[in-house]
Image (tube, rainbow, N blue to C red):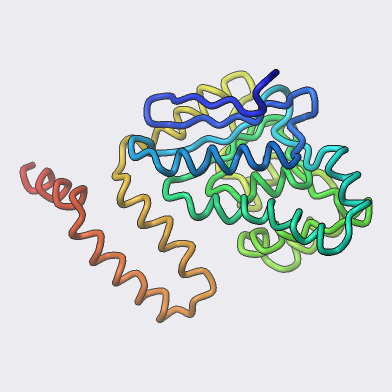
Length: 252
């Protein structure tokens, strides 16, 4: 039986690949659980500096698979609450993982697949990649990702993307700030690894603390955010990485 995830390491970069190419890497309970387990495993590995989440085959992820959609249609409100919470837990977990999680999008990232990419700390894509939230076309709501999208975009653009259901290209996604880098299809794998390897050249503890700070101040007023920055700054100064970095700097 084919594994639904492929996991490998490139130096200090953990590659987690959704491996249902025949289903366009569509999400079901098993795949969501496997991704959560893989992220927790990576988070516990102190040798890692970064995680890359990708998809096997032509597409990153097409959203929920047919069996999941059929289950939604037949489930009660309480059952749907539990089902929705499973995907919500994945989105939350990505932010709780201490090191950066990069979505590497080839082909289409649609519906829950687009939400999964958007939930990652960083997104890179091929120049032919496509994104979109088509849920409204079948009376569904891209609800969990709304909280993430609204933090990345203004009200007007978030409203348009969530309620019109159209696909948009990687270049537009980068223009909106939803994609960090766009790479050529032919050299995508190499470019993604090179981009991710940036985190092997900087302090892991500094990146961890920056990620935690960035998300913890979301929604804070200016004074509170600066206050959190003071605390993080002081904690960073007493880490081994900072002490060694200062020593190297002073020796120059």
